[in-house]
Length: 178
Ligand code: FES
Ligand code: FES
Image (cartoon, rainbow, N blue to C red; front, side, top):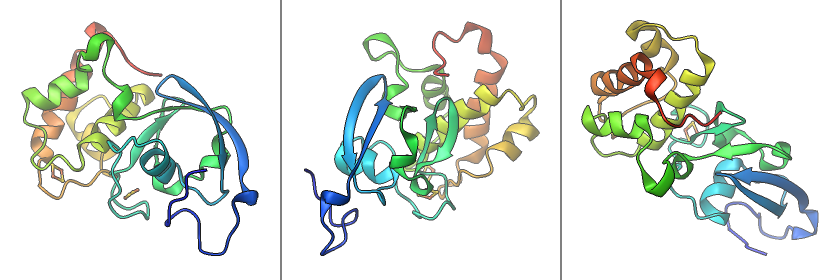
């Protein structure tokens, strides 16, 4: 069994592991996990899906945002063992057939919606969650409903441009993970 120093405290045996079945980016997984493993650590350390970023690890920055059954969550605050039967989508699962960019990825590129890119996977997953929720109808509402995703580079105007673009063009979007 994989042992990561941050997920298994010294002296604790992995006999404490709990069996969990979940799907990540469409791939069904059967995992034995220590009960304290966050979804973020599962994704990054065990599944090597490092697109999802660890910023604060305390629910403050949104860098770790992924979709669970189509709803956006901070994966650093979610225990993986609580997700039995869930479908998780990370930034690695957003692209379409043959690696075609998801409309949000395409819009972020076209609008320069990033600088260092560290917050970008979380921004894009959060934006997809926002679109799934269907509450944002205007730029101001996008701004309010994306406020949990911090961008230290200050790319906010371009991020808003990208999301607004996709919101206004939803009908032509080829793939929207639910
Ligand atoms: Fe999860 Fe910051 S790393 S909110
Ligand atoms: Fe650098 Fe957002 S692009 S933190």
